Image (cartoon, rainbow, N blue to C red; front, side, top):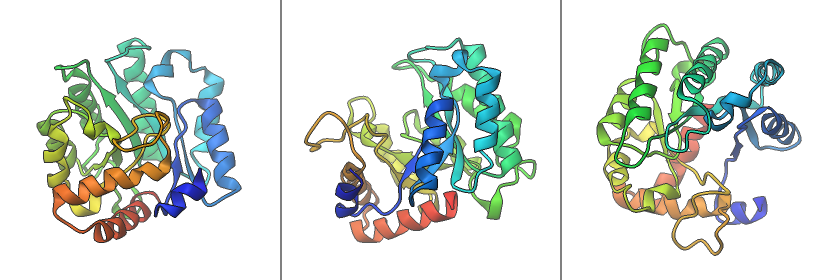
Length: 247
């Protein structure tokens, strides 16, 4: 899978943790290769996370090859964990990100036509000090990344005011996500990323339902088209952005 992605031009890999076990496996993979890792607890699993899980996440978060905190955030669409538990889980990640100086990887979904998760996420970021002197990241990096962007345009604008980065995945091609094209045009060039979210969110043209890192090429070519830039130039920018934000 990695070889196929490299053949398609992928130069950077980040394997996010979404609970204690996957964070541990991600960190182990990073230690044995040139892949980067993150450590965190997804909102889907917030209600199941134990004190021991959190102790492990906090230890992993301080490893050099664990370059980000998360994937965490809020998911009011599926609601696998109660909202108050999700919010408490998010706040622990916000504190950990501030303590380590590493950026957050943030998941955020509301039910169709709603935006309560996005509004709550922005409020929590503001309360934690994102975009202010209270939040110190290494070398002035963005405090967080909105991964696999979904939501209204003014949510993206609020996140950009807080100095966040924004990443796009195959989700941008789905019906109901048309605002993503507008948002992709307004993200500052140095805060833009592309991703697969594999094994989910295969873009059009992928040869099988399970997504793979190589298919980030499809999303990147779409981004180049909407931003009116050559794919090669955008690719160089995305690699530079990745290195600035995560490394």
